View: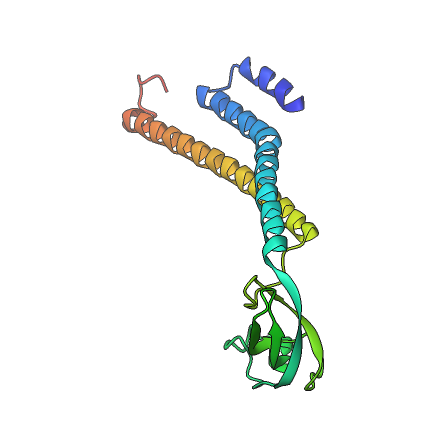
Length: 201
């Protein structure tokens, strides 16, 4: 309200220029977009992301199955991730050769990461597999999906507000540059006669 009252007074100020009024309206429009449009876009984006993630959660729950695997022996402690900066201690200490039976009854054997601190032959642990017994990642849970959706909506709202503010700044910068250009042209016309007798200065 204070901004609107100030804009009304500025409209009748005898010292205001047309560009000043345009800048004020641009600022007001950008403020309304940031306060109203950006949150709305964020809510819509978060809702769409949430729907997609929840569908993924349901699909993963149907297609991914927990099975019990048995440790055969520990595997090469070389990290699964070849980059030492991103490899974790869990990668280098929990790799084991194990065997398990898939949901389709097939027997599988391979090197996997076990959720065991000190795996020994015969230890059992849970792995997630698809319908044919191939190891897959743990399915996404509902809470994590909701968190990702909220973050997506928030990020979209912030990005939208940033675009609006950036556009406003670019527009005002362009207007200021044009104003300076007009001043330069006006000065080039009157500058040579500035201060001379009879020029009205």
